[in-house]
Each structure stands twice: as structure tokens, then as C-alpha cells.
Image (cartoon, rainbow, N blue to C red; front, side, top):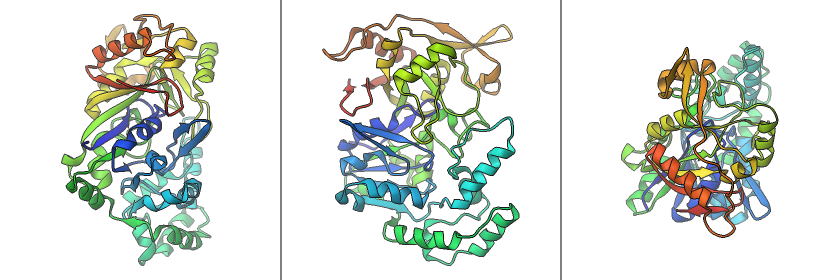
Length: 404
């Protein structure tokens, strides 16, 4: 197999973890290339649920695990996740020496910054991800490699003190982080190239979703890094030619966590019903997700931006239990309809969705093969998005997946 990226096409929480776990068996390694422990990728096997914040979701398939330089690493979270793995799986991990680290002070700074935003908060997870990326840009962030070098922690302590954040414990934190990371740090980009030269393949795992990308998402209500497939070469340190194809993941409806515009958002009893049936609560924070109808305007934008040649559609079973199916095909503003997400991007909070109800979705039970209404949904999405649907997920559990 060739290399493949799995990328979210909405505002995150599309089901990337399940898709990565499902596909991982066909690859030699799984590599995370962006984000940090603000991600929450869930894998359900039988009655056991596993949520990964930093480890690639292929961890339960016994694959080689790679965390690229584009990821910011919280050693505390990483240690907790490694402790939950079977003993024979823990030795498969390499963390790039160039990864920035997330300190306890970064988490405190995250909370301070959110408070400063007052009535217009971003909705951050307060896990220190934004401050860690910001410190990298300021050339103040400690990296994994600095744990065995001569990093100037006095300078970093002075920075936190100027912000009235107590730097006490920073050196002790670094000492504990060194014990964890010194044996597993390496050059992830070099390792991906080695796998490719030996005829192997790597599955690239993104975090969050395209509409949360720092540059191309619904700014300023976005994450602190890049979430699109084009970030793979940078986030891993590999040639663009090794990035492979892109598989985009989308729910059959839309969700969003935190603040920001959401044109197709649903309120009231129907929203509560979808949230309950779909178990729409954040894997990282536990916060209830905002829910809405499928937004084809945004989805077409994300498919093109990522060059997605295949799709995975999740939560299709939820729609049949809700008993309603609507699709946004355009945005209306000042009496005009716009079907180009980029044109509407600066005005998402002022647009009204233009809906279609292409067909009812009554029977999405996969008990006796692929249901007729499921085929209608697949055909409709392929026609609208001009992209092949490869996977359909109809439940959380690993086996509740159909490969077309």
C-alpha cells in the first residue's frame, strides 16, 4: 500500500480515531503530524473504550508509532497513555526530538488567555497547546532534544514571571520529562523515509478538523496549528512526494465544540435528541458538542483543500434514529445565495443556511447487509462532492464499519 493521510473535514470529532484504527492493519506505521493532547481520538473494541490524546490511534494494532515534529508533546499525558498500553506495545513509539513540550505553566497561561478574551472566548481545552505553539514561534519553547542539552530554563522562568505565572517546579518537570523521553526520542522524518525506501507504508493521522485550521479555518475560532493534509511534509519533516493520498472523514451531520460561527447549528429538543443518540460529548473535555445539519458548502471546501480522493462517512445510524435529514447547499446573506465557503468565510456568523431535504433516511440498519437508504446517502454524497466514499461507519465499535 502507498502512504495515506486521514484528515477531518469538519470542525473535528468526525471519527478519525476509529478510521485510523480500522485502517492501521494495512500499514507498517502510524504517524501523528499535528496538534497535541487537545485531540481526543476514540477507539471502541467490544465493550472497551480507548481514548488517545497524543499516541497515534494505531496503538492497539501493534503498529510502529511515530509522533512528528509538528506535534506539541505533554509528557504528563504521554506517560499516562503509555501506561495504559499492553507491555509489548510500549516499545513501538518514537517521538521526534524537535517536538516542542507543553509545560504546566503553558496550561496555566492557556487559562489566563481565555479569561482575557472575556465575552468572546475561543473555547480552548486549556491543555496548554496554544501557548506551546506560540512559544515555539517566539523561540522560547523547550523541545524534546533540549531535555538532554543545555536549555536556558532561567530565561523561560523569567518569561512566565513577567506574566505573573509561577515558574516553580519547571526544572523538576523537565527532569521527569527527561526520564520518559530520552529513550524514545528520534528523527521521525528520517524513519518515514526509511520505511518508504524499504517498500513499506505509513498511515498519517491528523488532529482536529479542516475548519479549525489556523490559516484556513473559521479564524479566530480555530486551533493553534494546521489541520490539513498539506501540513504532513512540514509536520513530519518528509518530502511532499511521500505525503500520499488523502482520505477525508466527515459525519453525516455536523458538530462543533467551543465558540465560533456554526451556520447549520440546531437548537432545542432536536439538538438534544441528536446529541443523546450520537453521544456528542467531547472526548477530551466532556463538554456537550453543538450539533447541526450536514453543511455541503463547508464540506466541498474541505474536500478540495485536502485533495481528498476518498471519504469515510460516520454516524449514519444516528440520522435514522432522529427521523430527519437536511443538507445545507448554500448560504444566504443580504438576499443573495453563496455556495463558495471562502467567499462567505468572513461572514459565517451572519449567513442563513439554505436547506434541501434530498430524501428521507428511515432504514439505516446494517443488520442484514448494506441498507437501501445507506446506498442513497452514499450516492448523494459522491455526486455532490465528486469523491468516492470508501468507508461507512454506523456505530462506535471497531467492527461497525463497512468498506465499499
